[in-house]
Image (cartoon, rainbow, N blue to C red; front, side, top):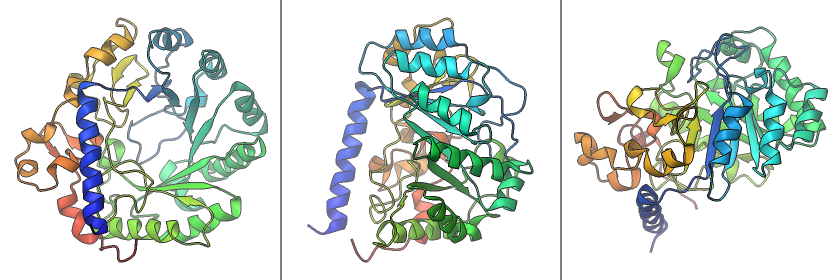
Length: 361
């Protein structure tokens, strides 16, 4: 069996596992958008966060965690900027005291040496920091002068406190040419894990049509990641995100796992207003809200809700129905599915031709 045939066989096995999860879901990750407030106004923000917003209370989170009667999922705190929550460290301590492993996604602008030390004391296990280019480009995207310097300060403070932060970089038209410079910067900074990803057609990014990478640029990004992953001189883990089916040529070449969208079968989220949903990146549509933690038992909702994510959404899409990759792809990622028109916003059939065939495995 050649490598492509082997990978396709393995992809089909993963798809079979996805189908079993639709009937027997396993809660592996639980995201809390503890606030949708943010001190930045990023042009690509999927949540369209702002300075004003809502917060979940410590009581909200404790009530939710107390309903979990299965293996403990990993808890992910996000926002907005989670550290803007007035009771952030109370929430962090609460999660740790209940025996949950937890991590955070942050812009790092509020992290100095003191905050990093408190994060260590609070039991935080992992942290992902957003850094979207060199200084001028990052600040322009984040719409705040000095955001880059504060983010770099935060990264160094986290390292000094004993963390190994993963850096996530969202690539778009204005920073794509800085890919190599960002790589060099992160290596010099001692970053062990870097996740370059493409800007998605969600949230504020839809308001700026010039941000999206072309399909050719997406192919170039994946080739770059593959090159670094197979470069014996690169000690930093370089990995693509969980989004998107990439075809058998590139699956397992740019990340350690095969594509499987876990929205509603492995992953659940709680928005800052208490709404229970699958993935925070998914369009916030009323029909996709599964309940609210202030009125519903979270675990009951997890076990008995999420019907929109536990079926074959490709059955409603004529182009998917005609696609040979349909079973493996499953309609691609739930957060880039067009729920209004029942079709994927990004499709391997469209961009696959710009992903070259891997010659060595």
